[in-house]
Length: 167
Image (cartoon, rainbow, N blue to C red; front, side, top):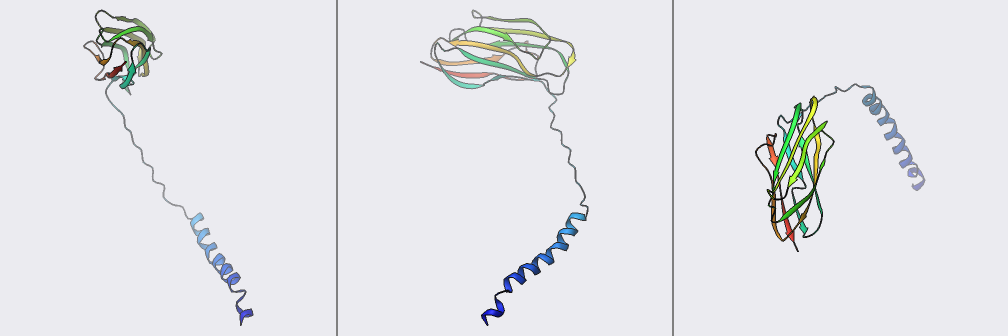
């Protein structure tokens, strides 16, 4: 009796292969309707923000910050930024121009007033998304320092930064 069933697994495997071939052929040759989804998540406002927005730093350490400007789909000709900070807690040491604007009329800082001013423009209206400028500052003493965008900043949404300074 043992000899009669020793080929049974081979026959069952061959049978399942023969039965699945027509199913595979039908699946491959039948055209399925293609569903295309088009989504657009566009923002219709300009945004200026600091990068990073929150961090902890030690005193007497040079800290870089980026000012990110996003006009999204809006075309703009000018991007102006006025950023304020507490000059008793930090000293700005440099403001570097970014690459998203054609001209930078003003890129300066005033450690007495605690203010950074950047006035920039494009030759033609265009959308900009990227680094408007870079800042480097040095924390002077422990505390919490805030960088806030002030009146004069040409953006509809503004996200400043808050940094914890330790010894």
